[in-house]
Image 1 (cartoon, rainbow, N blue to C red):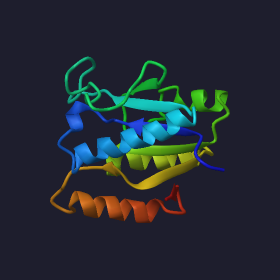
Image 2 (tube, helix red, strand yellow):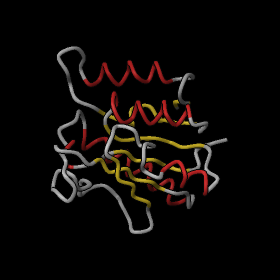
Image 3 (spheres, helix red, strand yellow):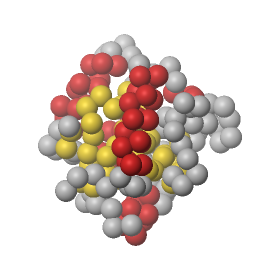
Image 4 (cartoon, rainbow, N blue to C red):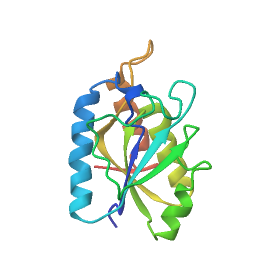
Length: 160
């Protein structure tokens, strides 16, 4: 199989300082165009918490992101895209078994989506470099991205 839906996680203004954010948005928009040409579903997760309150500028999708009216948007209040969002039910109702993930933040919401999706029986996919995060005292963003992709490959996702 190949991915049947694209899951774009948390590409919001509140995370716009992530490593190579503008380049990531450009790549995600290219991926979105590929899915639109194939008439495959595009699903956006929009994180809501005290740092990105509902309706705030930080909460809004970044202006450059190609979100359209026919796309599906789910709100989430945790790092887990599947927890109390309706995402799993939507995917099962649409008979979607293979999901490609991209967006933010590598070690939180992307990691959780891949692991939980795998646990729920979905085939999870990721294109290398289609996610980002922030530098920390322990790891640079580039190191965190490489580290997680190594862990995910074959265990939780197919990475291409």
